Amino acid sequence: MTQRPVPLPVHQTPALPMPPADVSPPAPSVSPAPHDWAWLRRQAGFALWSAGYLLRHRLPPPFYYYFGGIGDVFLMTAVLREQALRGHDPALVMTDWGDLFAHNPDVRGLLPVEVRLPPLLQRLGRPVFHPYYALAYDPVHDRHPAPPYPIIARMCEVCGISGPVGIRPYLFLTDQEKQGGLRVPRQVAIMSSGMSAQPPFLNKQWFPDRYQAVVTALKSTYDFVQLGSPSDPLLEGALDLRGRTTRRESAAILSRSLAFVGQVGFLMHVARAVECPSVIIYGGREHPSQSGYACNENLYSPVPCAPCWQQNRCDYGRMCLDNITAPQVIDALRRQVALAGTTLPTETYTLPPA
Image (tube, rainbow, N blue to C red; front, side, top):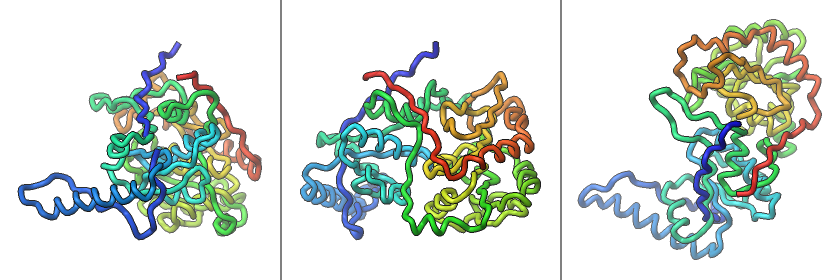
């Protein structure tokens, strides 16, 4: 039996409602120097802002933050939904990607990232939650320990949640946004690289020439729309939207697509949030049961070293990714397109009482 990791401490402390649009905390400073009057002014500005904010909002709601990649930050929406289902008030979220939480009924307000705010609220006895799922990084082997159960469930557990939890994130689009998401008639969204992610993981990266083979084989059947970064390899035969959409526009495109083809990362999570059937090239870095969604076609290679959870190092030539062929992806895409327009099933994971 796989041993469960020791849960990280639950930092209990709720958050502050959203400040007016023109009010944000002064930018943090790094280190003071003797007679650094600018640093002192910034410190004083933050203290005054914090005092005024707390006076205006005497009982701030639960406060959530996550210092990590955009995909992991977005997964906080799953935690917020589970807390709301258990009767918790809408939360305040500290993030630089507030557009991902817009129109979310589980969110009361947003704050820009200010690293001094969580400890300040903790000292004041307010509930603060940091749903960080990863255990200590091992730089020698370039890996985090593999989570023994879904990372969304782990994030919920860190926040003190028990019982069944839904393994899916949430994103709320307006009708107008959805209408703008249809760019071509038989729309299938696709990516060609994940190397613009911060940080980039080579062990998630499938091969651009194989993505191209998928487009070439099916471009007479589907109209491909390429999402991603301007630096991603161009896919000939696809509508090129690399770097030309906002995050919410990309979500709207996924919401109107017959399916999505890509790899583990932010767009995979957004596609699930907007009910877009997906084909996800996993390889062997992660197991789909750890980070994915059962409603997708998850192409996983059960090679002896998988799942390794290494980021960029590989002593085996990334054979787990090499094992996945373009014909496999093509067959999987045809199956997933049949699910377009349906409500995808949500798997659950039951967490024991704390």
